[in-house]
Each structure stands twice: as C-alpha cells, then as structure tokens.
Length: 205
Image (cartoon, rainbow, N blue to C red; front, side, top):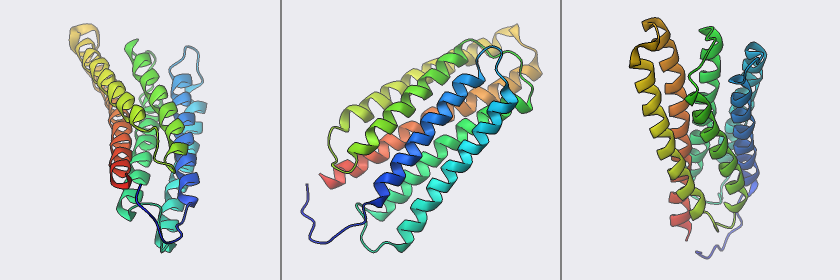
C-alpha cells in the first residue's frame, strides 16, 4: 500500500456503499417482478424510485468529486466506478419498464435464472464495497463476478435459441428479446464495476 502524507476525503466510500446497496434493492424488485401473480405495474413504480435513488447517489458522488481537493484514489476511477454502478441500475430499471410497457404476460423460464444471477452479483458488489477502503480481500469478488457474467452469457444464448425456436410469434420475440437484452446488459455492467474495482486495487497496491 502506498504511503499517503496528506488527508483524504473518505466520504466517497459511504456513497459507493449506498449505490451498491441500492442495486440489491433493484435486483430483488426484479425477482418480485417476474414472480407469478406479481403486481408488475406497482413493482415497476418502485423500480423507477430505486433508479432515481441511484441517480441521486451518482450525483452526490460527482458533486463531492468536484468539491474535493484530496480523493481516496484517482479521480478518473471514482468517476468510472460511480458511472458503472449507475449503468447497472439503468439497465435493470429499463428491463422492468419494458415488461410493463409491452404487457408481457409470460416470460421464458430461464429469465428467472438471468435475474438470479443479477441478484447474486448485486449482493456480492454490496458486500465488496466496505472492503474498498482497505483494498483487501477483493480478488475473490471480481473473480466471482466474472464467473457469474460467464454464466449470464450462457443463459442469454440459451434464451435466444429458445426465442427463435418457433414457439413465439415474431412480435413477441422482439418484445422478449429487448427484455433479455437489457438483463444481459446489466450482467455485463456488473462485470464492468468489478473490472473498475480491480483496476483501482492494482493501482493502490
């Protein structure tokens, strides 16, 4: 760990933790959304509120970044991490919104597996944030996120094959594909968060 001779602004860590915890809330709302008998309209509203809360976290980080002379790590990395966390929430909210807007009644069963991967990735990301300050015990986090992203890719490809297998009408295929595309984007964005944290940890070691 490199020696620091000046004080630094540590409030960023709490804001990153808030942003990551908000992703857990969003992922669990997705689990509710795809459950049988769910009030999808109400859940989508909660998801929009969750996305708004994520935006507020991101804006708070950017505001603090603009006002801070000393930062806990590189300013560019703070910006990147805040943006990556925000991207995850945006993709999850968009997927939920599309389900409601398109009035999708039944989702392919493997969408449940997609969302379960996102929920686990969100939990791991939230668990990793408190360790960011000490820059310790983070390698297992990004390794597991990478594994989950690979799993998400496999589920996504299987879903595509299912969609184009002739079971669905062309219009329904288009609607469902947009939803699973956004869920896949969310999985990719979780990996980008982990990659950013790995970059920060390498620089700070």
